[in-house]
Image (cartoon, rainbow, N blue to C red; front, side):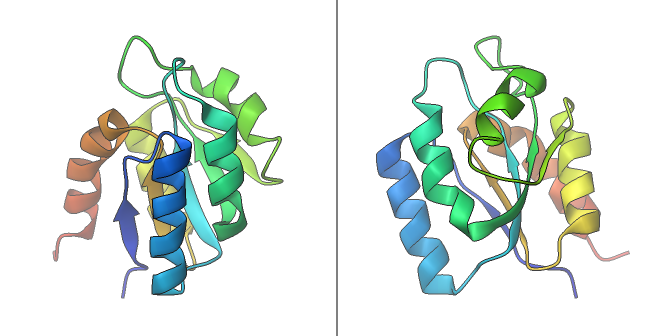
Length: 128
């Protein structure tokens, strides 16, 4: 059985707080996160909120011209998480997360990101 997969658009402190409540209610910890955000968002507070629920963060580039590049975003993620992997292609980041996650996969940081990786995850999780 595949680990749980959650997609959330949390990209500001209020969204981060709501996501934390949901993760707590579901009893989810040790997640592998796929995360990328747009430059005009207050990223660090959200990363700080979600990091305690994550074992690892795979940072990626959101398919939007306002996005941080994965490399740029990694510098922020490393301030809150000790295990950060850079994967610029968000589809590949989702694949990597699904292949390596133990407790579950969490995609967050942007609705653009969630929208882009959803079809990839659905295809990977579809019964063969």
